Image (cartoon, rainbow, N blue to C red; front, side, top):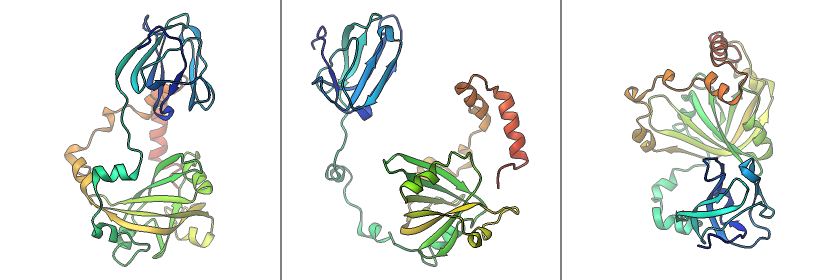
Length: 302
């Protein structure tokens, strides 16, 4: 395995490589990933290692840089160990590299082709039946991505019918106050393609819409989205490209609407506890109490 050899480490798939800092007395730095003995020139990632495992980073593009570094067998998955002085110690192979599918042909070989009837349900517009899924839904998931393909999924919810069916090819989603990070809205400005998943409580079928979105501040349409006396400042105008029902299997397998599977919120970390784990200055109890008071007043809902 060449355990004493000092050589560059070229990552076979940098997007699936994890750089993890540890200090257990034996390994000051452990690199876990798919690696192969390779060239020291430009590869898909750069690893920067400090002596004693004081710091580490992984960047896209560039050359391998390290005080000490070692080589795994080609296609191996395992550990590369560096001692406290930053010198290469050895490698430990855990197993063969994970296999990934890389083409639709490979994918189809595993799962086969869809039935013609399944393909036929995908339509480019709503009709008097399918529009009922939009009109009776109080909740949807909105999927967006930016121009580089970085994705985001966020929830949208209001009283049933909050998404307005402008016509059979157009929807309007009112934008309510949130955390002001506005991931979805920024993505839409960069890449208009969106995906919507409409849910109706207690119903295991869902309804999917894919299309192109724009942001609108049209006052006449905002006036139609009033809730609790408040109008949205803007909305998401969606031009439908695909609309179709999604089968119940995921909901049936997960027992999502089965009350016997519901969990008590108190059994999970509170929002305050999670914030305190990120920011030392946050007091979890104070944070949770203030948040509960705001929600009780419905502050910032509309």
